[in-house]
Image (cartoon, rainbow, N blue to C red; front, top):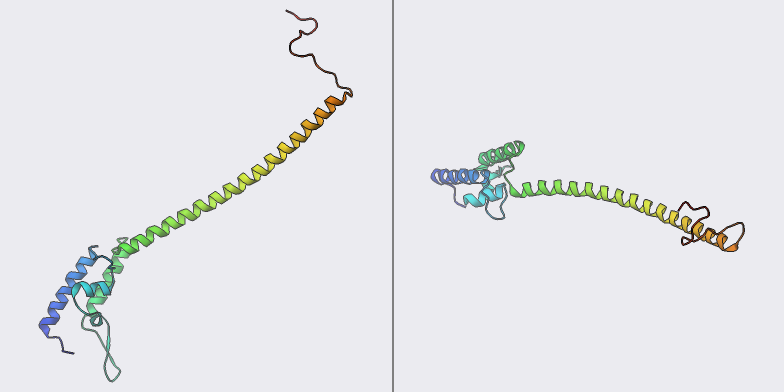
Length: 163
């Protein structure tokens, strides 16, 4: 693999900085996120330059653009901490989490209301059954003729009418 010349490295850094500004302004490509993969794709460089390298003797050295990756991640975190979510997916996730919490709360309230209405229905049905039984008992008592006197029908005038 060929080594980068200083001119190539300077052009790549300029492209990375331009892509960084594009992403941080919220202008993401379709399917892109505020991450190093999208940054590398927009800049036209490989992602490997953003990560540290290992020499043959096992020692580590920084990647060619690692300082830009660290700057990018720091700036994204600053924007997120300030409440400006750059990544529309992250904003959608937050919106869906809020909506999910609201729906859970509504579900809890609805379940409580259903329980309350079910208890009311049970009491109402038992009261209706008791009232029906009482009406049946009174009807049976009325037809048996024991100590029950019939009232005059509505068509006849009562005794001593004032009319």
